[in-house]
Amino acid sequence: MIQTSQILDTLRMIDQEKLDVRTITMGISLFNCVCDDTQRLASRVYGRIARQAENLVRVGREIEREFGVPIVNKRISVTPISLITGAIDDPLPVARALDRAAHETGVDFIGGYSALVQKGMTAADRRLIASIPQALSETELMCSSVNVASTRAGIDMDAVRLCGEAVKALAEKTKDQDGLGCAKLVIFANAVEDNPFMAGAFHGPGEGDCAVSVGVSGPGVVKRALEHVRGESFDVVAETIKKTAFRITRVGQLVAMEASQRLHVPFGIVDLSLAPTPAIGDSVAHILEEMGLEKCGTHGSTAALALLNDAVKKGGVMASSHVGGLSGAFIPVSEDIGMIEAAACGALTLDKLEAMTCVCSVGLDMIAVPGDTSAATISAIIADEAAIGMINSKTTAVRVIPAPGKQVGDFVEFGGLLGRAPVIPVHPFKSDDFIARGGRIPAPLHSLRN
Image (cartoon, rainbow, N blue to C red):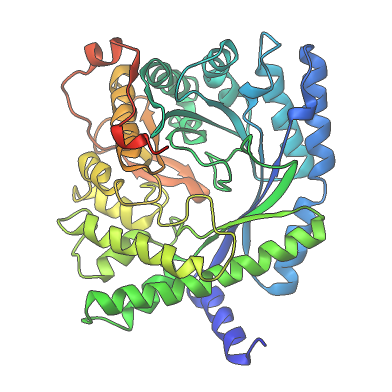
């Protein structure tokens, strides 16, 4: 039975500590749309999404009003598009259909303009990757992702090279917006099939016809909880985070089950990631600083993040039978006021961020680099992050923005949840010959588990 104290506790978390449900994401399979006529395929994709998700936004708003829980975004994810475009020559009409369907249903974003190329690329995969700069520069709500590596397959370095070139071209095509298009593209290793968070959401081939998943967020709640245990040991810190993550996840579970029932769609998962925003009091970096660090990025930051990520998972899995997605702590630089401050003062560097990605939920996220950074350097950054994911059997990702015309010390301004970011330096030494080798970096020995 729900106690009055529990209700009041949840209301306080929402009102004072910025607890929210970051997203309700409906995953939709598009396999039944496949055909060999481009326009028919695009029409089928649009129709399937528009019918299946027609009530998603309405239901989300109803739950917000009735339960008093903010739901920041309503989103759609679909089958990786390269899997359904093998019989056509140009995926761009499908990209436009996805964007039209997102506008029609009223969602904030649609994800799944994606390719899974960890072991090799089909002709459809190559066409999709080549089309990404054009597709993301001419659509508004569509997001894209490419999975270039996995622990079982290794790293497809040909795909890594193509993705670096795509990022560079996309930045140029959206230079009037500080390279904003790159914020809608993420390059993965070990991508998961049920991630509700953009820009990397897609409805994996192992999923059913449709599912509704929820991503919760509550950095402010965790920060406030740790304020009450200042000076205590890390045992107490870990226990406090676990208990807080349990409470946060219960809110997400409630919203997910309610959305599932009202939409008549199976419940997928709750992703219990701590996803920050640029707002004051909603920062993962400030959680790490609450543990005793003067500034996020200084020595000890990786250890603090490891504790946070682990405790969030341990607490959250007790609150839901279906925890999935990425689940842990995100460290997107432009979307976290504490990360922005740390990067601006030089405490947080690209190398330190890479080290921290060994223990966080994803990877190098929403990082602005100089606009003259070469495609080969971007590819090398992707390769490094993919290697961390491959060796450590975890999801890692890269979402970098080579900001056209900007240099170290300048800022890029994206607004909203995407925030703002200082341009931080990359190494001046080239990786061109390394990237030009191509081929595949083999999977590690520990991938042979059978």
